[in-house]
Image (cartoon, rainbow over all chains, first blue to last red; front, top):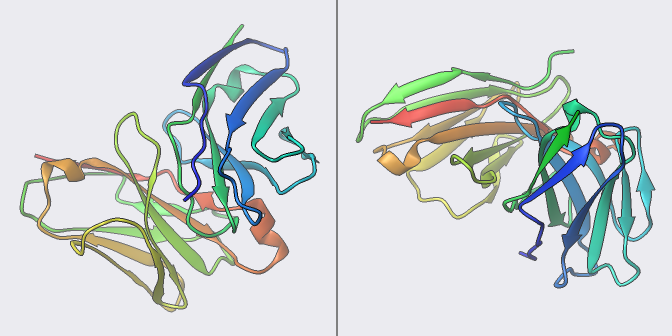
Length: 110
Length: 116
């Protein structure tokens, strides 16, 4: 299983953009890049996923490097409710086995 | 529309006992996955059930077994409990092969198991 590397923690101010990085230098050609987040006392929730092109949805944007060895999850305006652990996960399927790492704990300051 | 539900919420057992955890998937979903999350760690994949059969399995011993019923609900059984089995057990459901799978897996709130 391909491995991802994320910073242990990050801080952001409320209503400012947040860029959460993820390195995945051993990504294979068929691996999608998935992001999930886990709010306190809840199960993880899907945020976004992509293969090669940048992706946008109502929650966030995903910027994927041209060589696909890194990606960045972008929260355009952080709110206090975005404080969570964010996981970057590689996998060939969005509904199959998910291999979670340690994730990045995001703190949002008012 | 009810999401993924799990029962019980909390459970306390002693070493050597057996436990059964239950999961009802999101309405319309046919695939159930189970994860174990130790304190301060990311979830670890245990196994996945589809069409009442185990389809994928993670690196967990045979003490961990499961079942999926015709209504797609699922059970996770753990035998001969060890102290190290204390964790949050998460169930996730999905619907493979449709536009819904673009939204990934939907997780329940988990069952907190404490083994004394």
